Length: 284
Image (cartoon, rainbow, N blue to C red; front, top):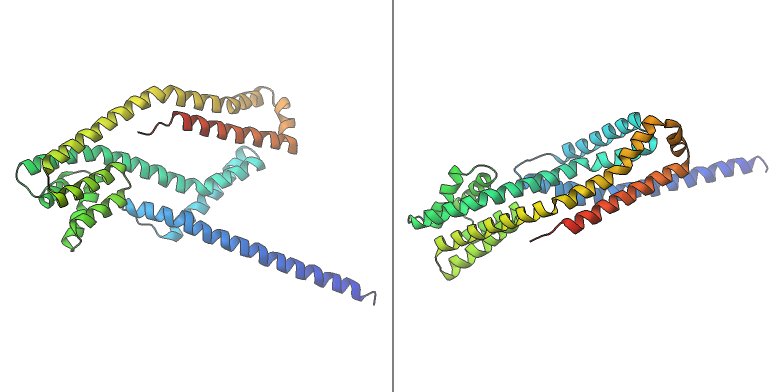
């Protein structure tokens, strides 16, 4: 009977570990599905809207590669705690870069849209139709505006309605200025009006908004720079002290309390940066 107890205990432990593995596996599967729905699909949509078509497996492989690379680098340069943060940051780095590239593309599109609207106004004054003016702009405009207008022309030739093709382009670009142009153009085409004057007014409105945004950016540049300087001061001071007096910094990196303090400082720095950016980020 006594010999039976160790066997039952081993069987119970094995069963508990098995069920624990199933629970952990289910959590990871749901987390992976959530990741695919929220991040991979969104990133692929952003890349597709920028005419960059990548297989989902390639994007996932890129995420894993940057995660491993940054994790190893931070472990070699710093320590295990920083390697954890480096690994997490490396996993989300490709998606962050995709968002930044999309924002840069939208800014470039908005800048090109001003000249395109002025060109369409001149084309209307010369007697061209709306479709002819769009084709005229699509041939000469640089990317990304040239890509979007070319796709718009192809959709029309395939039988898509003018209004719907214009709304599709606005949804694909993701620009507030393009949304304004699409809505104003569809309304003007349905109700009638001077298209040349409308495009010229839209061009002037967007150009004036650019001027206001530049003025606001110059006025808030000092606040943004102060935020970066204040956020970088603890890190720079820690590196300087670690270089000159490593004996003073070593106890901070040899205990869990030290790691907790470093993590608390990092969290407060990030929160401070977000608050400063929220204050100086003025949307018009």
